[in-house]
Image (cartoon, rainbow, N blue to C red; front, side, top):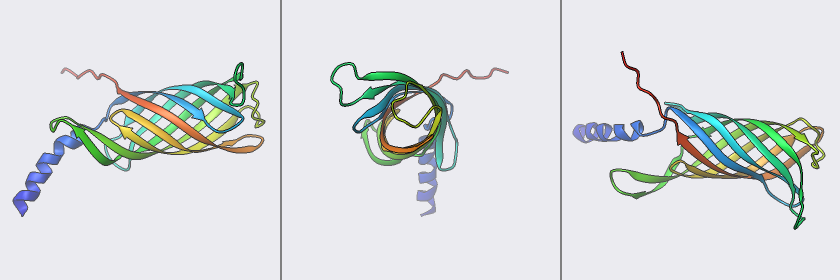
Length: 180
């Protein structure tokens, strides 16, 4: 029994070492969904993997987007929006693996919590500028690709809650090894 536990600990070590701990370039698309005026934008940011604990990565990013009228067929855009985002993502709970035995791809579930400060020009939402938002986003992750969907609450002169849909891609940044 002790031999099996020692073998299990030795075999699980490479799996822990394969997790991303260095810097990450995060890219993505962000949408508030529903009827009426919505925000659609592009995200870019820097993330950092954490070695232990329930939080897998923290990130600081920028969101640049526009307001879109979902009811309009042509010419439904009005104004621009910029946001600075601070996010934290939990470790993914693996639900499936596929691919080769030596380098499997994992499918997992995680939760991302984001806080965003926005400034907009010609905002049709009626919450003023600047305003803030808090999002709790359950997600599906396959490798470095993630799909998140959940509520986001906007706080300004009025409070507004909208569904949020995000597509995320994390790219590990190259690290130079230190030479003595």
